[in-house]
Length: 166
Image (spheres, rainbow, N blue to C red):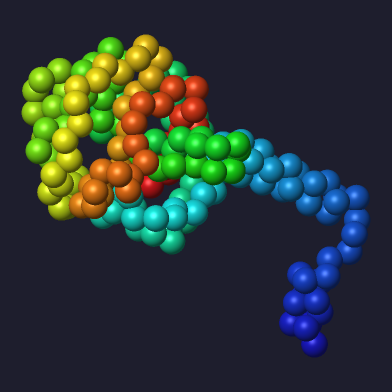
């Protein structure tokens, strides 16, 4: 009998002023945390495999670049269109650097880069291009398909929302 009463009180508490204040504080904290600090996002597509799989859920840590800029090798969440459509990509080149793909090899300022996060080799060839100021060059980790089937390139730092939490 006592257990039934406790279970009932847990699921149907008395609506006292203290309860309403607690519930309001929890709702406000959830809104601030999940609306402005740790925005959840669903990974759609295979562009970041093997590090991030299609269908996974992750959180965008929006304070990651509050005091610094993204570095080469960072995985970033980019606002693609509006506020709801985002891309998950890896930063491969920074502002004022020359980026080039030659027979599947990434070259930054003419030097071949080691990319241990890649699983499959690619055969991409892209002429050299300079990354503009206040921008970075991003691309996915899964480069096994033709270059025309991928979304990649230069993006403004203002479009970077943050980085994935894990």
